[in-house]
Image (cartoon, rainbow, N blue to C red; front, side, top):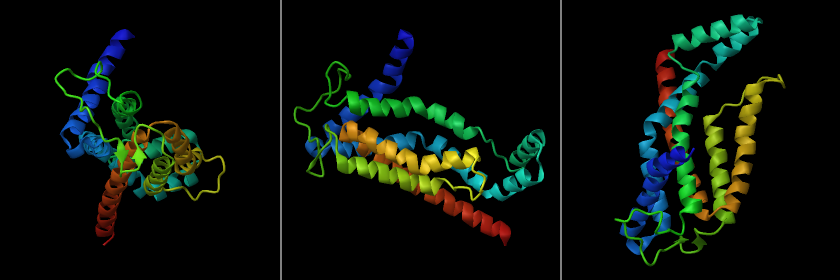
Amino acid sequence: MSYLKVFYNEVFYRPLLGALVFLTSVLPGHDLGLAVILLTVFIRTLTFPFTHQMLKTQSAMKRIEPEVKKIYAEKKNKEEQTKALMELYRAHGINPLSGFFMLLIQLPLLFAMYQVFWRGIPFQAGEVYSFLNIPESINTMFLGFIPLTEASVLLAVLAAASQFLQAKLAVVVSNSSDKKDMQRMMQTQMVYFFPIMIFFIAFKLPAAVSLYWTAMNVFAIVHEAIVRRKAEKRSASYGG
């Protein structure tokens, strides 16, 4: 277990902490808030191939939703449904498990980012690479009035609101009237319950975590909008 901990610290946690320290040290005024945003841009760039594949899969799943509903309506046998769905996914080049695998790949990186903000701020010399200089004076006030080392109601609200918008954009809630529809229940929880949970979690953590989550959601919203627009154009061209 200790080997896994060492591996995690040296491959994920310390490099990200070092990147945040470096950005803070080179930015004008040693602005921690700007450093968090820039580090978020770096992480989004690093994980772009994974997130883009997930979004493409989600978009394709939405596109074939009418055909999926038709299969469930016409085939009552579970084995027939599964076989028909697999054939449909294969015909459209969709791997329904790809999103899950992509998420598993990103989880250690995402968790390390959170740990950097709730454990690494203020910076501890013992956890930072010796070749990096920790600035003596760090501007931890985001926009001049939000302390990033303390919990912030405003940023917690922004994190929750941006999560809600991102979920609403990414998820199409089924119109099925079947109350036992597990997919519908999960989608509803993602859209409405998850942002509430994010608010209460963010409210108890340093505001830097809320700022990071908000910035990640903003990038995700923009990315999702671009992928969706391209998918709509592609569908329109096929329809024409």
